[in-house]
Image (cartoon, rainbow, N blue to C red; front, side):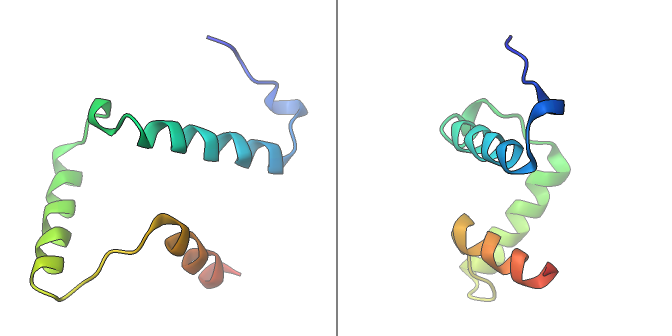
Length: 71
């Protein structure tokens, strides 16, 4: 497995690599094991959506909301 020169990378470069990793992982979701406690949370949230008590947002929107909260 190739290694990255993390100590030589800028924060911006590291974040770009993380984005690329997440994008790749999203294409292979069925290969990622989900712990039962996490599945339980997701199932509850999905049920709230079905009941009209919650909604999903896309990841881009979620990232913007998080960034606004912490800045």
